[in-house]
Image (tube, rainbow, N blue to C red):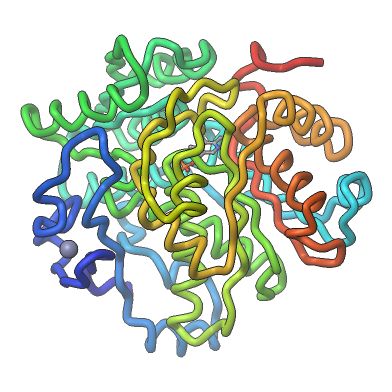
Length: 385
Ligand SMILES: *Cc1c(COP(=O)(O)O)cnc(C)c1O
Ligand SMILES: [Zn+2]
């Protein structure tokens, strides 16, 4: 394993693997629930050795931050990447691929983060993993804890789609429904781990959530014949998938495997636009009143806003918003031209892509990868056919 240590993305201070668990103690001193995380840690690897090994035998396990012996039995990732000429033609592109992460075991990309954090819990001999979630992170954690024989403790808003609440229960997780928003659930779960212990899997808060989501970026690179696409389109709530995709290509670059980063298009729901506003104005403020059919990207205070905006700047990317109507239209178009049924949040990416092509941000011949993050059967109530 080539994982070396953690480094604070804010002050640069380095920490040994078991010296800290969550945030940089210095930079998170003034952190309180209800603001974007400060002092988020990134995993640093022995990039020189990885670069050498990659030449002999490329593989994403070279960039893993937990030893494979601790992985839960339920395997995640390795989802298909495929060209879709029908959709490309419909929206005015010549080279469009879909990465279908709705095909993960619990039906969303969140399985990647939960897989790695559960492996970490097994390494640390923790019996219990705790998370706040709008739904999918909870489904993922419930499934992966079931596979590992650990207890999952879930804080979720009452408003989560019924299928997601069923998923949590069928895997035997302990569900605490919070009478409030996702942001309230986030605060409640932090309080709980401070009081009761267990490993907290809150997105962005545990550095291995970013590392887990990173695997999707590494897979995209490998499945694309070790070519860097021009654009990767990512639906954004807390900004952790965006950070994970960014970290994948930064790690590849640090190991000397690639020389340029793909541009990232962040797509948010109109009412859940904190990262977009932050990127455009340079000043952070909460989303005013998040309310969208895309529940998985409905966030007032994106936990990973600072890293997300840095990722957009470093990749020469951008961030845009889409309406619920545009999301519904995109959901239908995706289903009818590709056979992929995506939940609303996972359809937001396509809605944003259509907009970005219309605004000439993305040009006709750019090579684009559209990341589909969650399965449509998770929320059939939101479908408008
Ligand atoms: C969580 C989630 C997102 C957004 O990921 P963030 O890391 O919160 O930005 C997008 N789509 C789906 C289906 C999700 O579950
Ligand atoms: Zn720091």
